[in-house]
Length: 164
Image 1 (cartoon, rainbow, N blue to C red):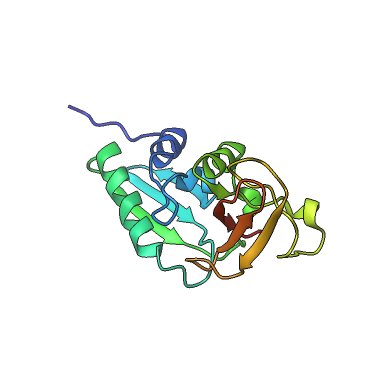
Image 2: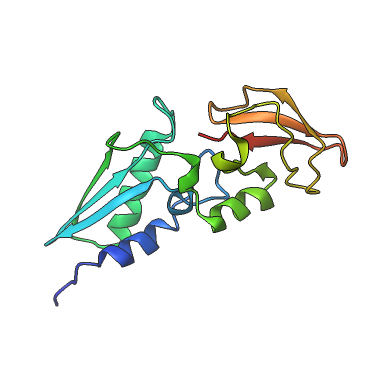
């Protein structure tokens, strides 16, 4: 019995099932950290972009990708590397990823073009009610990539993914 090696497209589809460990509502594909997928014979190579230097979730992400590739392609070797060849930015988050963030109560980052200079005080839309009557409560959320905001319309606090 011959086991076939999955295509790069099949690998990306499988990686779309790997959730970000800090924001489980979004996959690593929709988060935009999957930079490159290469298949060379029975060797699979995946390059990932860290969202922030020193992100504490990198080892967990690497292990989850290896585990998923092991189930997809038993017998293939999987090389998973993080690279800084290009910077990750919030522009890499897919529209589906932005919607998943909003639906989970986490404010998606505002496109950088909408902000001009990055202004942490800018009123950003509330993921619960859509109001722009929001205020920054704390620039430092539970992780380096998030801040804490408050909506004065629906009175909900929420985390906002910072624009990078």
